[in-house]
Length: 322
Image 1 (spheres, rainbow, N blue to C red):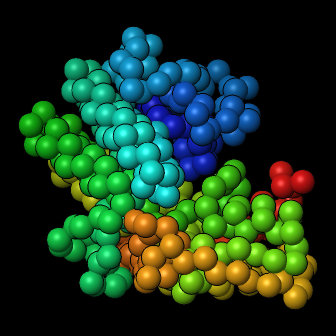
Image 2: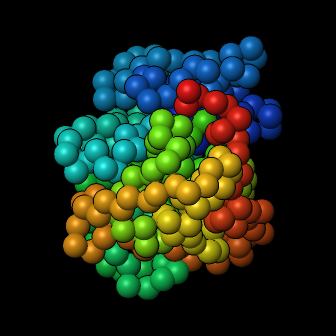
């Protein structure tokens, strides 16, 4: 099969590319390298079954559209992943998340035949009153521009499915961590402690509690959902992709400090809102209901704490912080 992975040079996308190549797919990556890196694609660059197209999905260039039209499946993982940035630069998220998704859908519509897998986010739920939160939870009320754009993308995807018959799988990811992850709380803590091992600034009051999933588990879940959906007959379907438990930001700080072999670190909490959020739009509590995903035969190997610990260890071994 021929697969296109948009955003394939990024964190999750590049791990997905590796897995698809190992499964015998011909893979074309479309990425503008604004946040991704060719270094993440080292394995693919040596293979004849791999092709890289440097392109910006905000623009309808012939090369990437041709790749989409000739594919069997499009994994649309290109996005601006910075939830915090969406508060101060909302236009960037409209253009890099919503507009790019529209362009990809148009390419799929005009090409015909390609199945779409869309990387959505737990942020579409906002401050859900039901925790763990199932896929059928309503109303969806995101509290960030990032979450709003992801929800708008989902509506575009499902509408294109109903109107044009594009089969689409939507995956709502929790916090994914592991090698090649250059953003998020773990990378932030390692970077800060590498500069000052005696003190750590923590955004928020430290009580934020969320679910974390290791990248290997996330990719296995992605492929499990894809195989299940591909072999079924539904026009579109939604799965939560997360863990069964959660962990606080302060507990993550404790894990990072311990793995770095530090003691006596002074935590300086910096809440951005009266509720103790890390920034405006930060969902304080997030735990997805993954019973639907488990019902098709998938389970995580690492719980949230183990995922954070393993991610910390591999990022420290990479030593990009000094």
